[in-house]
Structures are given as C-alpha cells and as structure tokens.
Length: 182
Image 1 (tube, helix red, strand yellow):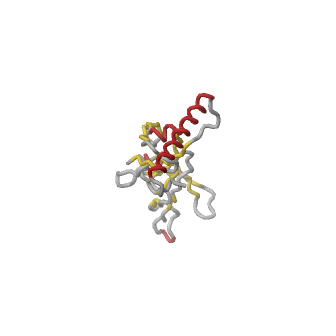
Image 2 (cartoon, rainbow, N blue to C red):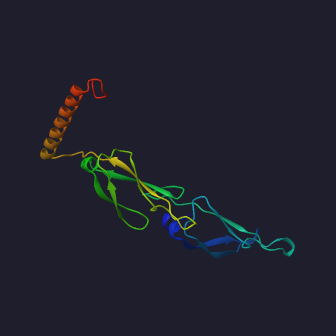
C-alpha cells in the first residue's frame, strides 16, 4: 500500500518476504518504487522468490500496488479529483482560491457564475506517470450557504433577491414565451 505522494514521487520500501514453505525464516528486501507507479500496477522482482526445484533459479515475487485512501484526493488513473467549497459571492463574482496539490498549494481561478458540480481543471497537477508526464487535477465545486448570517448580511441577501425578481419580471415582460415566463 502506497500513499499518493509516494506513488507520485517514488520511494523505497522494505518488504518482508516469508521463507520457503515450512521454513519459519523470513527476509527483508528494499524495493525501489519508481515515480508514477499507478494503482493496480504489478511489479515483478526477478529471482527474489523461493529457490527453484532441483537447483533451478529462484522464482519471481510479484508486488501488487494499491494506493491508500487519501482524505483530500480521489484517484482516476493519473488524474486526481478533489472538492472545493465556495461561498456564494465567490461563485457569483469569481475568485482566486487556494487549493492543495501534491506539490503544495496553488491558486485556482474560479470564473464568475460557477455552479455546484462544475469541474475546474488544473493541467499537469495530478499524479506523475511512468512516461514523465502528469495527470490533471480536477477541483469539483460546491457552494456553501452560510447557516448563520448577520442582520446586515440578511439585508444584502434580501436586496439581491429583490433585484433578481425585478430582473426576472422585466425579462418575462419582454420575452413572454421564454423559459422564465410562468
């Protein structure tokens, strides 16, 4: 089991290998995991297994790579997905918000008019691949509505609602057969 960061950057792991059948001894191997190792990948360790029959060469050991659960990112091949929470004004007006990546925090530009569920792509900010490239990072937006607002904030939201109703009424009057009518 590897962390996302170890799979991304590469690492060396110490793996305990049980001894031959019936032998209680085990040994340790230091295994180099290259950068860009993917979930579900199998690594072959040549002639590191049990000795062959009748003096033949040792067998191979196969390591099956599994990525550990990460609290921030979900893995889709070499792409990473994560959630980003926006306040209503950030979604409406647009904003630059700080988001984590495997290489540290970066600014994500949220365009004006962003809705919940929109995927914003950060190119080449996902997991490394074995060819020297990288996957992408997708930030999936969620709009957080404040549970508690001040009297001043409530007044601003009421003014916004009034302005939106006035705009919709004007639109419906000018375009009676539109989707807003009714």
